[in-house]
Image (cartoon, rainbow, N blue to C red; front, side, top):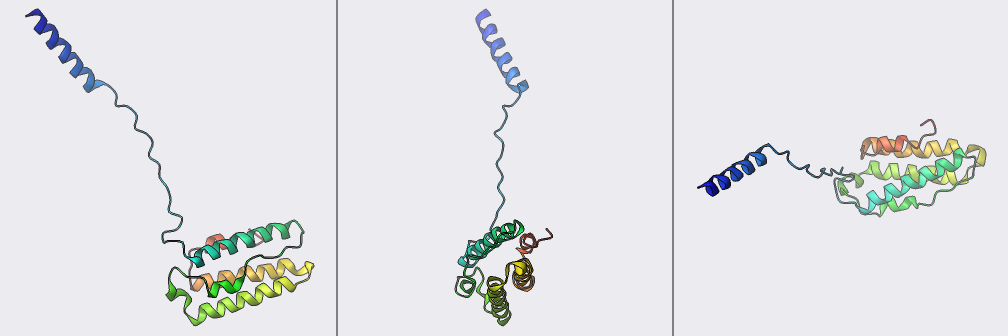
Length: 147
């Protein structure tokens, strides 16, 4: 009988401890943010490359260096878009042609005028994105020299 009481006491004590004991810490939950809610299309990847290229050029111009852009702006007409409706408009084509003109003018500019022509190039990006795809506008804003 004493054995049964001892087993019962140990069992009750174990149950009591398990109820009072702190729960072990859960591993922290890792949250990720979605950088691209859609699959990355060719055009989206091209636009990111264009941004990186322009950011590099901005840095070089701020350092007083001569810089040239490495991307081919004509690819914006052939790269597969995320949403073909956005790039099949006449306004997209016109904005694209304006960007190419600003791109060519930048490459032909004298060193003293490079920053001014670069700002025109950035503005052509911003103007298109205001009407076509506003998502990247905050990022494009970083390309202006006053930012």
